Structures are given as C-alpha cells and as structure tokens.
Amino acid sequence: MGSPFCYIGRVRKMKIYILTDLEGVGGVLNRSQVFDGAPGYEKAREWLTMEVNAAVEGAIEGGAKEVLVLDSHGTNQARNFRYEMLHEGARYIQGIPRTDYLQGIDSSFDGLFQIGVHAMAGTPGAILEHTMSSEAWVEMKVNGVTMGEIGLSAAAAGVFDVPFVMVSGDDKACAEAAAINPAIEQAVVKEGISRHCAKLLPMQAVHNVIREKATRAMDRLKSIPPYKIESPVEIEVRYFRNDVYEGIREREGVRKVSPQTVIFSGKTIVEAWRRVWGG
Image (cartoon, rainbow, N blue to C red; front, side, top):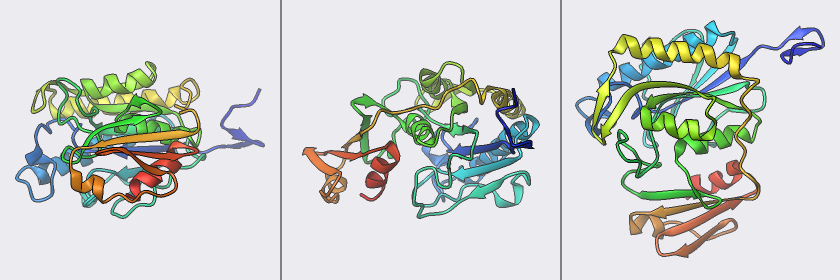
C-alpha cells in the first residue's frame, strides 16, 4: 500500500498551518505586555517571534515542506511578529482586515499548530484568560457548549479536514486543547497560578519544548482526526457591554435572543463565524 502522502508516484509536500496568539507566550503575564504601546509589548513581540521560529523549526525537522503562519493577536493590529527575526522556512500572514478566522487555510494542509494561545474566559488560574475580548465578551457557546478560541480554531480547521495536532501555552490552555483530543502534542510553557501570576520556564527551555513537540506532532498527522462540529452550527455570544450588542444588526443568520446575547448561525462553523466577524 502506498503512503497516504503519495499521489500517483509523487510525494506530497506536507503543509502545516500555524495560528499564533500572544497571551500564551512564555514570560507574558499581564496586559502591559499584550497591547501596542504598552511598556512590555516590544519585548513580548520578540518572545512570540522566537516561539514561532521554534515551532517552524520543529515542523521542518518533522518533515514539513511548507509552513504558513498567521499572526492572530489583536483585531486592532495583527502585526505582532518582529519581521526581521522571522524564520526563513515559513510564510506569514499579518494585518487586518482578514476575510476568515484562519485566513488561507484549506484542505491542502496536513495539520494545525496553535502557538502562544490562552484559555477561554472564566478558566480558573489561567493567564490572561478571555474569549475574543476581555472587555466586550462574557462567553461563547457553539451548539450549546461553552468554547474558547482554541476550540474555535480547531473546529474551523476541521471544516477542511485539517487535524489540530499541537498547542503551546500555559497549562490551562493546553488542558483545554487536550479536551478536544488527548493525543495532541502539548508544549506547556508556564503554569498559571492566577490571571497575572505563573510559574515560568527559562526561555531556552520554552523554545526546546515547542520545537520538540512540533517535531513529534508531525508523526501524529494521520492518527489525530479533524475536530468536527455537527452541522448546522450556532455560535451564541454573550456580550458584556451594551454598545457592542446594540451595534449588531439582525439579519439572515443573526438574531438577538435576549439582552446582550446574539446567535450567529451557518451550515459550518466557518460560515457562522463569518457572521460574527461581520458584526
């Protein structure tokens, strides 16, 4: 029997999609590090870029021939990488507006990594936990089940049959990813004590564990199934602030069901999310 990565005698080039965030980066603990112009932001950008490079290196060591990396932190900027430091073995997406949550992903990719991600809103002991916006969102549910950004990304990749195979972040974020599939490779870069306090690993140890887990994840591409959400999909968002809720227009696939709660629906989670994205 031929390799699943062969097509008519031609070896398929394994492709990895990497989504990144900032709150789950080793050494990042508070809001002064995650917003443009804040005192610790420039240093946090460097740390993120180095962790991205470690993931890219691990993917390539594991056999990846193409790697696409999405800078996903901050809807007001999405330009967090230090451009001059980026690994030459990947290509990168930065900036806004984007048309999709996982811009550029399709069925040609073999696996999804999530680097520097955080746990969902309300997770005890998680560093900088939130879902989408700590200032505007209270909770998100998908088909009645509370979900954070990790699950949303995994499910969006699953629409294209791309399995979620590797994650890095604090121990609470990694546990959230493991709830999707315990076989996911987990790079725990810090252990959350409270929202702004953690037990940290030294920087080189963080890079080593990300690189190691990324390489190991390449061997899991066939054994971890894509994360699928049953169709049709309803994304229910409960907002904290009235002005956000009031600014949403009811239309096809968008209905207000109670004060501060809106349901966005679609055939897939990608279609439903496009309606959230559109406001």
